[in-house]
Image 1 (cartoon, rainbow, N blue to C red):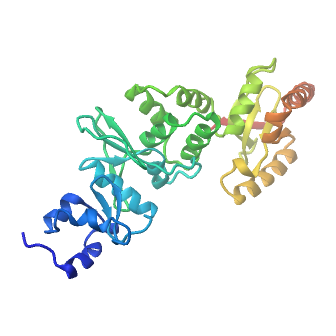
Image 2 (cartoon, one colour):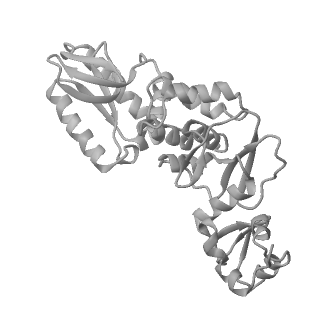
Image 3 (cartoon, rainbow, N blue to C red):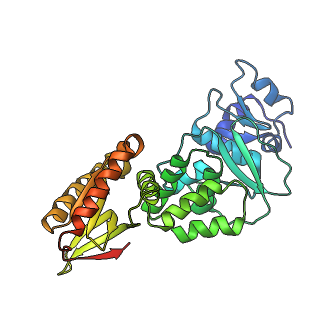
Length: 317
């Protein structure tokens, strides 16, 4: 193949997506073998991102260029997983992660390096393209992200966000954990146990732990309430159906949008007009003053038990 001349080398960046190329692809175009090493020297105009992978515009790579480089280094059949893939699926409550987590066939001898985290898998996977990048399923991405995260509340947040946005279901996440039989899923299994009970946020998980350690009966979680004539009153975080007591964890942080918070405030007014007794708790109270929260709940439950149950219907979400 003819060797590149100076003009050809200057135009190379436009020939590759995101201006990222592998050493092999450059050789196919006739680039001299020693050129990448020279171009990656100070002032040479290129940047070596990973072994055999180069940024042909030089300088610091963008996030997209890092992702491109990791997939090129990982080779054919690889796919994004973990935080990066979950983000590209639409999950937003994710931990900060500067690495790029890629899944490769188990037989491929490839080590993690720099910002690229390599995970080999014997289990086949299906991938879909998003913005030109192959992604594993959102369930697999979330589980892989959670396996690398030791903070329980962070795992709660990411799984709850995927569920609230309708990107996955409790059943599909549970299936992913059970089928894969991976090590390091203890935190994931804990959170799945919580969401199986209806818990949908870190704050609700704190609330669940508090009630389970008390003498109060266990409530149902995330229950839709309706008036006797079928008018919706909204979904309450916890519900003691026998006495008609609702519990709401009130915080903008644990709702997806400001609009969602405004809807919550309107819901509280509707519940009050329907005669439902509601205990309101801030997430910070669940961490700093659990004794006071438990006293409020116990008192409210006893008070609700002395009143006629409000004429509302409860439907588990």
